[in-house]
Length: 562
Ligand code: ADP
Ligand code: MG
Image 1 (tube, protein in one colour):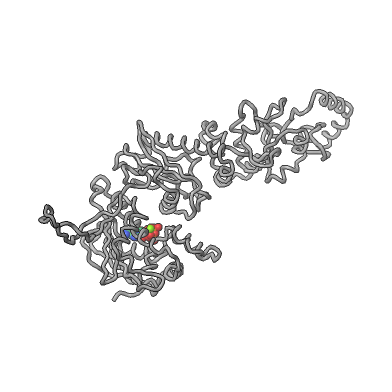
Image 2 (tube, helix red, strand yellow):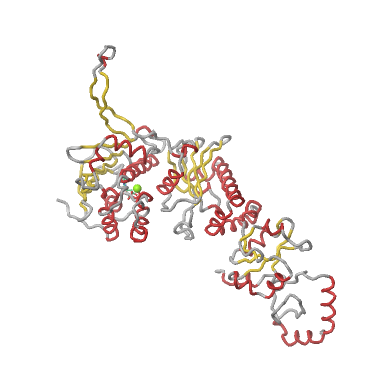
């Protein structure tokens, strides 16, 4: 007997939660096991691209009522001994962790949570009192058998298996008053579950099904006789979600697909599903997450879309499909025009890929534009999470792309006391106003207290408050919008005065000439000029920056590394 090993502490807690869960959605275990089988086949397929054909693969379900076992078999990549240990002995990174966090948050422990997560392999223990995994890694001679009751740890020992792949054998729990675990041995129930959760899986999910058929030799008689035969049936339609008609797909299906494939446990904010026919034909299923993904600002965050060719998975994170400014977008592209055994290096130079990337960028930006005009509140939610990426979009490529982004930008406005677009600002500029005024600072409250801001507001001008470090770079890159230049109101002269006010100022200056000169001399090189100004409404003096760098930008530069 192999030595029993303990689960890692984290896994143990998750298992406890799973096993003792009172959730009604225990049935999702099947979806999870099938999706793992499909992933394993994808991996095998990718490793052997060009040498295998998709129809060599299948996922098989087998129910044995006497033994109370349900077996799911795949001919995918398989797992080595180390991988069995690593993958099944440790908590899975993705869905399971998020699931655990939510489920432990008492306030949210209402009944439906489980359906929202990709909870992975461990979900098997919701319905099984014993799980055996027999697996043979592609290219290895020896197979291994992992076994666990989910509570007291697991064992791994050597085993036999004809070819690469995995077999998951569940021994179902005894029925209780609330849970009829035997239902998962019934053909109609299994068929139903596959249709409900795994229909789009691209490999056939097969099962031997008993059906009643007319006996061949009695076919033409008046009294046809029936016989029971075993038929090998494929339970899923194998049409991937993105290949189905948009009108036939529910929001729920889109959301579930997102959560299963892109490691999020919240619904996405937006789904963008479209096809393009032409020089390059492709279908894209894109998602805008509803919140900043974990690790998004880490160096090792991987942007990119999944790439499929004729429905077959090619790679994760195809970077070239997404510009940096849209790195928050998740999703996939399926094209019939790419060659299947395309290598990663080749991908980088593929002009078809570039063409696809261009269409994708255009589409996402136009969706955002339409959200901005039609669903302002939704857009502002989006902006709060991801707006900064669009700001970077403005000055990526040395500002070459600024036109794509300028109408999607939002800034806080003194007049509206909320976010406004540049277009809205320019539309209500005063007749004699020549420039777009902005002031940068740490936050709205601080900027609002600045004397120059008060003056501008009193004179009826609108000011944009820039609170992000990048904002001023954005303004400098844009330079102007609808022929109005941007003007940092704390910098240099603002031509705010009427002719009369100017004359008045000139007069006062003349009268105070000696005083000003005296002040300049006393302050020496601490200031470059001492001026009289009517830029102040309540404060007696203020420092302003000259025409070069503004104070805020100087701070940004001072904080830059190197
Ligand atoms: P996830 O699928 O989100 O990674 P799971 O808990 O479902 O998490 O699975 C954990 C890991 O176990 C998988 O990432 C995979 O490496 C491995 N695994 C599970 N089932 C199989 C299988 N049928 N064939 C090969 N590897 C598998
Ligand atoms: Mg999984």
